[in-house]
Length: 69
Image (cartoon, one colour):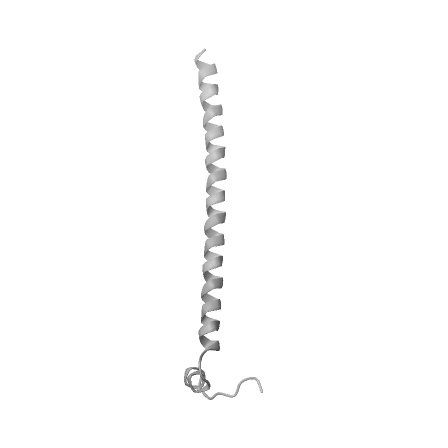
């Protein structure tokens, strides 16, 4: 009888462990998505700020270096 109870407990623990692993994977996926969205937002805002800069501000920031031409 003790073996059967022990087996039941191990099955329950395996089920709980599997659910916890699934939850962890879901939370990690959500966190990764949140990080990607924040990075995309940061890049977009940076582009918007640069887009709104005057030519003089852009020259001051990037210098008067010959670009690719």
